[in-house]
Image (cartoon, rainbow, N blue to C red; front, side, top):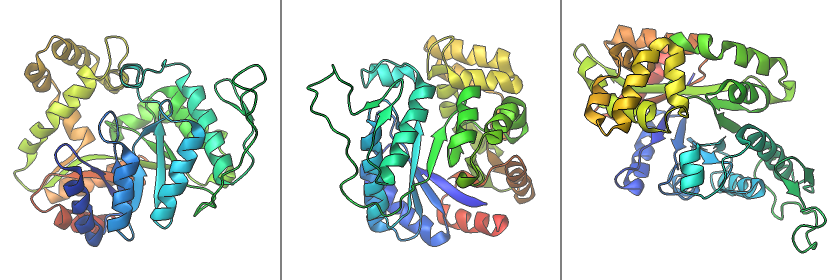
Amino acid sequence: MKISTMLMYDGNPRSAADQVVELEKAGIDTVWVAEAYGFDSPTLMGYLAAVTDTVEIGAAILNVFSRTPTLLAQTAAGLDNVSGGRAILGLGASGPQVVEGWHGMPYSRPLGRTKEAIDIVRAALRREVVEYDGKTFQLPLPQGEGTGLGKPLKMLTRPERSSVPIYIAALGQKSVEGAAEYADGWLPFLYSPEGASKVWGDALAAGRAKRSDDLGPLEIAAGGMVAVGDDVKGLLDFARPMTALYIGGMGARGKNFYNDLVSQYGYEKEAKEIQDLYLDGKKREAEAAVPLDLLEQVNLVGPEGYVKERIAAFRESGVTNLQVAPATDDPAGLVRQLKEWVS
């Protein structure tokens, strides 16, 4: 099992990236760089490539609406080159709030768009002449569209690797099935080892049944806050704001993937209450309404023996890369400890 962490850049992103250098010395395997509607992910990933030597650098995530598939391929190839073959391309559909509100793109056919984008990215990285006739993407543009001067092209420069690992951020049944079928890895969020099989078991099985042997086993990167000690349970309260934000505020009533997920875990009543409070502007009340046992399921906070049990639960549920948010004054020390426990 690998250990990874998400680069948090709420304050100074370059300072946060510099902290990865110390985590790399401690043995961190992967660092994920978010984008959403903040700083772009590739710029920070390129900076990380310059200041690190061994850590994998993954986008988590680049959405498939705001960049063309061939630009995604160019970005993956460039990051893989400057990092010496350490890039991971994390893709996802994001959500209508960001795609339509920030990027001004219609949130249409997210599943099909993701699959077609991956097909094109892989072809471009293999330096094939890219010709594609899909429902969302047509390369070159067909007759009657544009100037008519487009012609099939292949990537001008030679990529570091002809295949950069592609992970998909997915929560819905069809999206998860797709990730299990044609992605190298899967990036779930608010992942509960106890609830994963119930919610996604059938989807994962259906996808794996159609999976090409060329891809190898599906990698799964998931985890949560980590704190080790006899008196650290109170730290779970620090996870409440973000958890409430996703369950309550990421989307609208009837269109919130995270709210749907928590409902599927068995917290339907609580999910509705959190959303109602959050959308009514009562954020503190929404945070307080997040069930403690849900926070315990999606994080790893407690005495050493308990945290080891949680690591085992994540591993047994299929997680191959434990994504951790160290809640400690010594993140590098905690990473060293975790590396010993998972080795």
